[in-house]
Image (cartoon, rainbow, N blue to C red; front, side, top):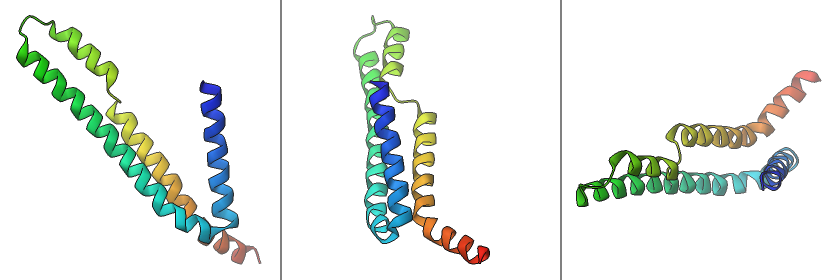
Length: 114
């Protein structure tokens, strides 16, 4: 499964980079869409984490005989770590912004070379 995922991820990165380099107008159109999709994914994962926390609190309030540490361990296993979420968002969005500015970066470098 990891092999398939890493292959698809590499293909997506290569495709986006080639699109941004060879067809900057086309990439500019999908950049906004990709940014919105990324934001929606991050908001969905954040909502998921908040729902898990709310669920844990409600279980603990409803039942006093439940082992608190066991429920917290289960909740921690279901949640996406916030640090990974932030790092992933910053990395992907930074790469999308880099691709958005790629035509101006390449144009500046080509002018200096001539």
